Length: 44
Image 1 (cartoon, helix red, strand yellow):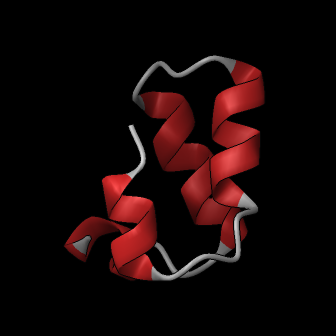
Image 2 (image 1 turned 30 degrees about the horizontal axis):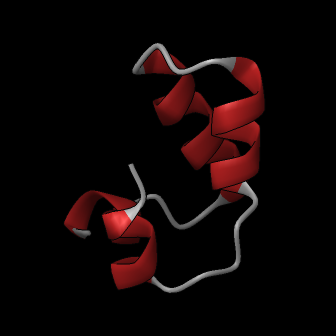
Image 3 (image 1 turned 60 degrees about the horizontal axis):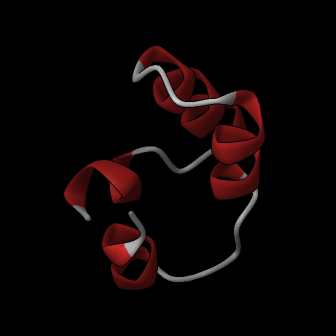
């Protein structure tokens, strides 16, 4: 949750999630999500 809160911009989330090695459709979907920090922290 703390990392997600630090990655405030969509561009930053895209870059960081891509660096984790996630498939394209997954990191694009997660980076553009408008859910809260705690909700996104529970997504697997």
